[in-house]
Image (tube, rainbow, N blue to C red; front, side, top):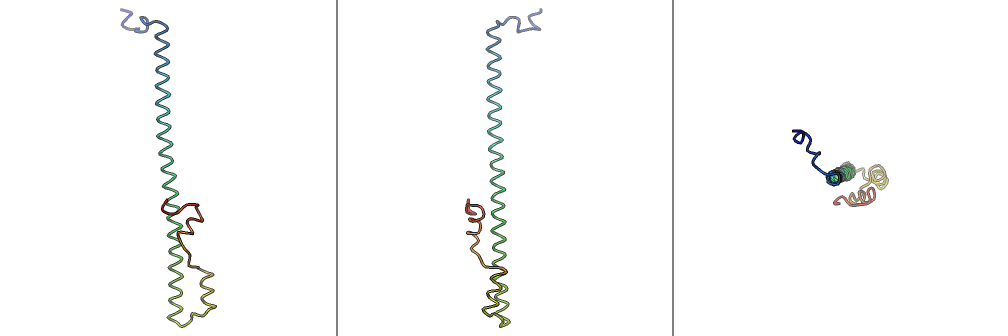
Length: 112
């Protein structure tokens, strides 16, 4: 009757040690797989954040370019576009190559 409640009593010490080693190995493998999954998820989150940051810089640059064009158009309509006014507009809100701005800011293009 005691055999039913204690199945370990019928197993040799070598077999017990082998079972324990296999259990530890399975635990290590499961932990390694879990760690790999977590690292990959974190990498994806970081990539998404970086892409969002690039998109924000790109959008802000496009907004600045639009303000530049609007101001120049307004000055043309008012016949107030002089070389000095043009220089002042370009100092306040210069028109820039937005893809180049992202590349210079982050070291990679907005498409990456």
